[in-house]
Length: 503
View: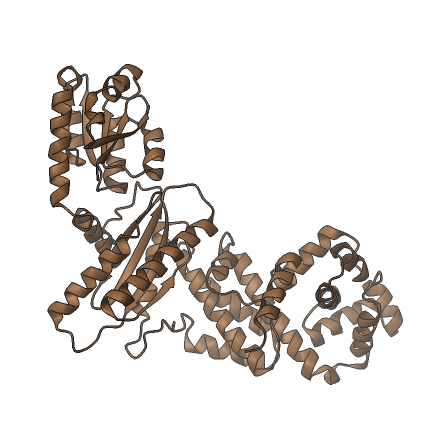
């Protein structure tokens, strides 16, 4: 395949000089494109396969030294030829240190010299596979991920997604055969590289891989996920056909920082159990915390449950971004067990990428309050299903009043009048017995009714009116607060469940 070449220079005259050379007509090399600066060059590289970059050293803004450093870190397989009008040793040293193949003065650059240089690069590349070109980078990433080495992505502005791979090795293979097989599997994953995406397969002995997909395009998160899933499915199929072995994989959520990604990967690798290929996470909560939280639920003590959830989040250092996802998952897993035990249907327990979406952009305080709110909602369900008979007469009458008049304008005073007690007294005993304020309880009734009407395909604005909400925006806010979904997302989830049918 002909080598693809990019020219980077802020001077039109020089770009034209290179582009008009006859060597591009001979078939060995293709002039893939031109760029007038570093930013434009990096955008081009993110979208196009490129083998060689010829760049000027003294460009305005981010000069050739900066460009060579960025290329070396992001695209280590690309060969570089630096050109300059000045013989500056400091530039030469830095650019060659960044992996440039040659440094040529513009006054000496002839078509013959450039063609000869490109042929040398071509010959060198023919002897080195893409797998070998990335060997040093893979070693650096391994040391960073597992041995507290320096982050090799410090100046890499890519968006990253990670897939964790567990390979089921057959015991009758020799160590040499297993080693060769693992290298072959890594090569298969890295062959999934395409325009706009680069793949690194980091082998973690004996039978694990960390696959890092780096993206330089400005595309949606859903599109990134789709690309990764497609790439991994193709790789999985190839591995099954070639080696007749099974692999387990988990595509991890994207993170905002490299440090969060590193912490998440370390946690997932450490939690593996030898007896299972599945990634079953041990609780980051202590056993004592788990027991105290379960005890609060069993005692129907909402304050203790809320305080326990907040205590668990409080122990997480703010900078440990990945642990927020992990702890949130464990709290939701525990909550799911509670709902199953009490036969309660919980509409929203986020999974996988939904879990990441649930936690992202939320502070520790907000996330803690949200999860505590889910626990309180479940406690209300349990209390409502099993213990309504324990309400005092006044609270029982208040609950009945709210259930009958939820679609009207309801206030604490109007409810107190109907029950025949003082407003402040009703407010106090209602909170003590139900674990929520009268307004919270009313909103819960209204949201449950809204869900029924949405099931029945009522128009959204009609639902707002029928449920007693005065403003559309307030309804959306309360619905989201109680279900953690918009009405549209709720209907979509309901439709998915309906289409799947019973197990």
